Length: 601
Image (cartoon, rainbow, N blue to C red; front, side):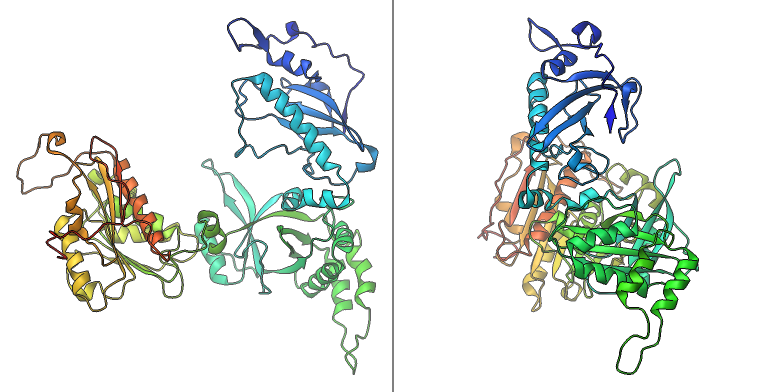
């Protein structure tokens, strides 16, 4: 990799790059001059060759040589912008001879130098001189770490090694990254639409159960063909020596070379697994690297080579259990032969198991699996609450169930606030919400719709772990509180979520048997002086309170928080309020029983 170093750096003055910006009242500084002052050289992109990325001919490139204890690196900063809210891309143009063809920490196979996680790091983009100084220091630090010795270099690799694999095709797996079991995996390739313009891309789905495959095809709106599923080999790899001579590997032979130095047992397991799964020309191998994650690749065998390999691996066994034919080490040269396989297709393996997804959402590994939850009221609050709860496990597990109850129908007037799209106009809200959630769920959801008004009887609430009152109807809230106390087998938790103070406050209350919905009346939310004049009259028709949807979505989010809090040993609060107007605000608290409550006193 390199650039035409013999070319003169003609654009080395401020006049050559008039890209100007004021940084204080007295001085005009250019981004170009700031890079030159930091020891960079300017090149037009057309003179930069052999970079692994295509450069636009009008882009600016700044190069600099950095010294390390192992030799010099030349880097290229690609097209820095005046907007330093994102740092520019940095690539390695040249490196010391001893590192040519080897992988180094923080340098991808595309020679991109990783400096910081731009999504988490912090700097002041308003002062470019400081940003460029920081960029210069980060490059030097990253290169010093990349050439660190032995054990230190392994430490730099840890937790990042999978990122250097640079998968070319997405593969989605129903398994937890880094914790693959010994189950039999199969896979299918499909073309999935990935843009509104109809652009399709190859992707792979890896599964243990045909139902998982069918669910994925349904989500991708693809027809399942009659072809036979292909085989997957899973190999666990220790992380004794993650670095390799050549990375990422471009052939099956190079994979074996790496495994031979990293984990000899894994090397042999991969060979045996591949030989076992020769029923089709194509198969996938997944390498589950301890404490790192999963990398994978698809192998495409030449038909003639596959036939020869099958012949050698299907020899009958002699008496005494010894193989009549070649041992593994004598079959390996045929497996590694250049003509046996085409170039491997590296896969970017992404877990779609529910456990993996849930771990990203919660600090505590608790979810609502196997909980029986009833939501009464599927309006704006109940609709958004159902969506949020489904994302954290509601309706999952062998005994889990999410029941939705509402007797109302979706009308055009609901659309500005409701979670449901216009597709469901005229549907019963509970049935529409059930179909909507199941249609777009990853995996099966156990959701049951009750398309009618809930009768306030004790037997109707029996058997649930959590009941959510999202009706916003005071008599319903009070009656549910009464039934909770009169039932010998009452649900452990009743959660009320409603908009208060004419849509200026979101309120959620958890009834765990100590205080009830009626006890909230001790808390004045809206003073008489702040009550708006009522524009309404008594009517036999439909009435509604005009306020923005954000109030209901906040209430729904508080309901999700309240439901997840019930999984803890102790409830941190039983009353929460969020105010969006001039109301009396009450801090989160454990609500005490109110002596004057008409329900529980």
